[in-house]
Structure formats: structure tokens, C-alpha cells
Amino acid sequence: MIRLRVNRHRRGNRDNLFGWTIFLLLLAIIAGVSWVGSFYIFGHPEKAVSYGILRTLGKIDAPKRFELTKAPRGQFLDANKLFERYGKMNPRELKAGNASLLRNYLRNYQRSKDLVPYVIGDFNVMGTFRLGPNNFFPDGVVALAQSKENPSVLLELIFPAAEADVGQLERMLCMGLDLSLARTLDLSALINARIMPDGRLNLTAVPLLYGSYTSTDATGTLNLEPPADLNISAGLPILNQAAVDEADQRYSAQLKPTGIAPRSPTLMRVQRTEAIAESAIPVARAEPVPPKAVPTQIDGRPVARALPVNADQSTIPVARAEPVNPGESTIPVARAEPVDPGAVPVAPLQPFATPVPSVVSALSADQWTVYKPGRMPRGRLLGIDAAGNLPAEDTGAVQYLAGDFQVSAAGQSRAVLRGSGGQQNIRVIVDFPGNIAPPAEGETVQRDAQRPFQITNVERGPDGQINVYAREITRP
Image 1 (cartoon, rainbow, N blue to C red):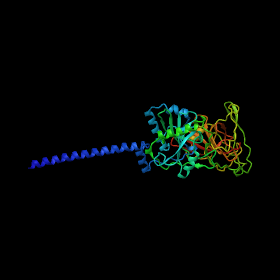
Image 2 (tube, rainbow, N blue to C red):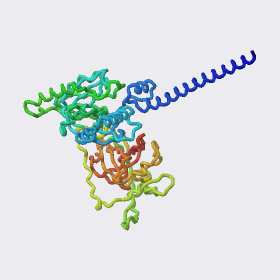
Image 3 (cartoon, helix red, strand yellow):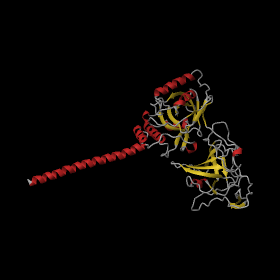
Image 4 (cartoon, helix red, strand yellow):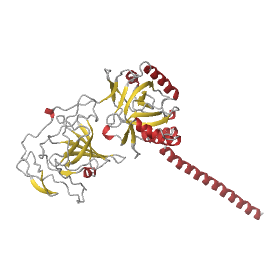
């Protein structure tokens, strides 16, 4: 009897051990599935299930409105370049490319190092369709347009808007309306591409600035708004083949009598700009002491350096605005060498053309003191590389920026500059007082110790883009 009890006890232990083994194995499988599943959900927000879970948990934001100076870096592609890139992809490549485009858009381009493809060029509207809850974008209007450069390229341009503005949008986006997408104004990001059965390329794009628009024959304007939520399960593109065929037939019927589209209005983006009157900008009342010239030798040529003087204390000498030594351990900087005006041709600064829609996001310039050349307060003179290395949100003492720059965008009170040394990740955003017109796009600007820009802030984006904010502080 004793032996039987011992055997039963041992058999029970073996049963319990087997049960615990199965239980622990199931827990390990569940943990592994959860771990892999979380990576999949966070890594693929373009999937409807993943997007719904992330939105419920508050782990992904709705599409946001970008400012022109803080928009993600991208490349501007016209219809021919887009057709050459996406029209030659096989179905597998196109599917992977579309997933990447949509994923970056849903993340507001925060975790992407890819250049955003922006659609540019001239298009003509073939038809307009109202969006609803069953569409990827629940509110607004989508315009189907044909490229004027390459008729084999069709564009679905999304206009997200409030319900109150949808009627006005439909009236503006009439058949035959010209859409001109400019690289410095619209920033229409590509989020999907498909090859139609007839070989044409159908693109879907959305303007990241969500600005205000009007047409040349309209009396009012309408405002676009970022969508509060998206219906991912509806998928892209917005229009199915039947809707495209219907718009194509109507558009062809309109062109049939003459073979060309009748003259139609053009859709234009509008930005409100408030320029400051010249009398509103404070200037120094006391006449500053004339600057002294200190001869130095640079490449065997005598060059005069500026000696900025305190405007309020004309009898007290102050330190020169000398370029910082690049070997200093505090902040590594690049020496801003004066440039011989005769060696490099420089385009004269011309006032920017007015009344047309602004090229740069219009922001009212703050009021600040404007000095004569060489008479600004003392400070540290930096090159563009050194300015990019300044601590973000804290420029410390007075910092000045000098060097050679190329104007990539300009407006009534602001210009975006790029260094001539190939610093693609650094852009300089300069505010100008209301009585000083910024240089036009494409011009070359050279600034030295006599007329530097004053650095006001430095910001770094998650994609590595560095924005150096500055302002004009000297008179021409």
C-alpha cells in the first residue's frame, strides 16, 4: 500500500510539471506575438487596423498644417519626372512605394529621412468630386486634373475643408480651371500613385500648407483645414476607375468642338501680409560715432574690418565684431572672409514684386532698431556652419551671420537663404523691416562684418533640418 501511494504521488508531480510547461510555453508565445504585433502596429500606421489602434491610444496625431519655412525637406517633380519615376515601376515596387508615401504622411514626416516628392507644374481640371465619410479624406473636395506638360499624367488634388466651404470649393474648381502648383508656394505632397489600365499615371497629392485660395474671377476666398481624422480603410486613390472615366468623357466632350479648352480662370493661393510702415520702425536717435578702419592682411590683400560702436555711448570704445577663432573650444565656427566685390558678380538687391500671392509664408516683422552699416552693437560674427552649431532655442549673446547666400524663396517681409557652400541641411530665414524689401528669389546675397544679419533663434527638426532665424539690422 505504501508503494502505491508513492507512485501516485510521483505521477501527480509529473502531471503538474507538464501542465506548467504548457502554460509557460503559451505565455511565451503570447509575449512574442504581442512584441511582434506592437512593432508591426507602430511600424505600419498605413494599415487600417494599426491606424485605428494608434489613434485610440493617442500614439499618432492627425495631419497637421505646416509652415513654409518648417515644411519637410523634399524634391520638386514635374509631370514628366513623376511619370519617369512611377510610371516604370512594377506592381510590387509601386505597392511598396505607396506604403512608404502614406506612412510618412500619416506620421507628419517626423520619422522619415526620405525627401518628400512635391508635385509642381500646370494642370487643368477635368472634374470635381465632393468627399464624404466613405472616402479616405472625409471632408472637402477632390479635383481631378490633367497635366499640361504630359497628358498621360492625371492628378487627384485633395482640398480638405470644412462643410461650410465645400460649396464654394465646388464652384471655384470648375471644369477647365487652371491649377498652377509652384515650388515656393503650394507644397503639394504626393501620397499615392497608380498606373491605370490605359497606361496613364494617376497621382494623389495633398497641400501640406492647407492655405487660402481664390480664383481670378472669384470675389471671395476659402480656407483649407487639415483633416481631423482619416478613413484609412477606404484606401487610395480617392477616385475609382468609373469616376475617372466619367470625368474623362465630359472633359473630352468639352474639348471636342475646338480641340482646346476654353479660357478659364486660374486658382491662386492667397496669403495675408501686413507690412509695417516705415515710420513705425524705431531707429537710434543719437548719431553713432563713425567706424574706424583697422587694416589687416587676408591673402596678401589689405581689408578693412568694421568696428561697431554703441549708439548710446558714443565716447566709449567697444570691442570689434571680429570673426570667432575656429579653434576655440566653446563654439566651433567658420571664419567669414570678406569678399572682393570685383571678383564675384553680385546681382543688385531689387524690391520684390508686390500684389501677387506671397512666395513665403507672410508673417508681420517685429519692430527692431535698424543701424547704419558697421554701427550695430558689438557681437560675435559667425559663418553659416558655425550658426548651425549654436545651441537650439538659445543663441546666447549677440550673434551675427555673414557669408555668401543664395535666395531660395522670398516674400514681402521674409526671405529663405541657402549657403553657397553646399550646406543642404541649413537654411537661413531672414525677416526684413517693412521699409526694406527682401532680395528676390534666385539672387545672390553677400554679407560681411559691415552688414551682417542678426541671429535671433536656431531650431533643429527631427529630420536633421536646421533653421537659423535672423533679421536685417542694417540699412542698404
